Length: 373
Ligand code: PMP
Image (cartoon, rainbow, N blue to C red):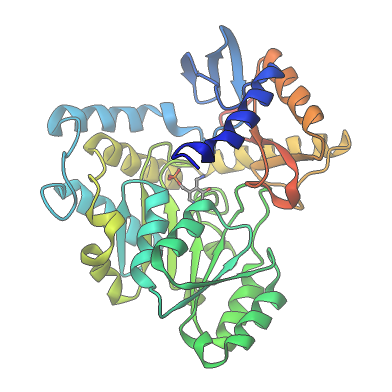
């Protein structure tokens, strides 16, 4: 075994894929035109796989805030939050986020991926147990791995299966950390929040909800808000890279221990903090999210329309209409032909392969924006 022999299988698979002519992992946005249009392969293309739910990447107030910040505070912080990388605006964004969610405190991370990694690895260690929905995002799986905790998966969106697993834990359930998502990133389905919260109240434990895809999409704040389960949820994590059109991640909580994460979380301590311009556009986007509910209405009109029409065409979709709409295809050749055919006709969607997909299917994953017409 050589150092690189582990890549042999991957290299073979990539070659086989490239030989078909489809290159789903090599798409280059040659020029971005708007939240929903770009030049790809020299052609004007509708971007229908971007997570740009509210279409805020070109919002004039977000751009102006970013430009003012880069002019006033420079291009980067060149340091970790723990050293020279805490500027006043980092604290301001944390206060905005805490106030927005009605929580005691908020902590921001350089990406959403790091938020999950940073919280899970700091809150739990090898003495603890984390109980996660089987369809959770890679950042949650990686956070579990980094924590060293025992990890138990329950069947996707199955509150009874969660209850069964907590029951088996006996007295350990009272300190288990349960992790779910508001909207799941692959099929766009929502967690059964009320049922899961009831199980948590019965068996104890702490509940973390990742609202990466639901912030600004389900109500203003996500599924915890629309399900009215504020009091059952101990941690909410999320990202600024989807509905808020920037990059960065966050966690909010009423638990006073959240503040200690600042000195114990390696993904918080050992990376450079968010750039001033990114903080500024995120803060502006958070204001737009609250001031312009019509964007969310438009997003849902678009989502319902695409979901209904794809379903009428006979595609197998996720169980709920959502801004994430994925057509499940079992045959790789069909998936590649559909993806390539769409791109040649000027429509970009995500092509997602197993094992990132549920049930070993291939997904043509569309994401809808309020900016689509
Ligand atoms: N959580 C979920 C559920 C996600 O889908 C993603 C990104 N796809 C992340 C976290 C990570 O967010 P970011 O891209 O901002 O790192």
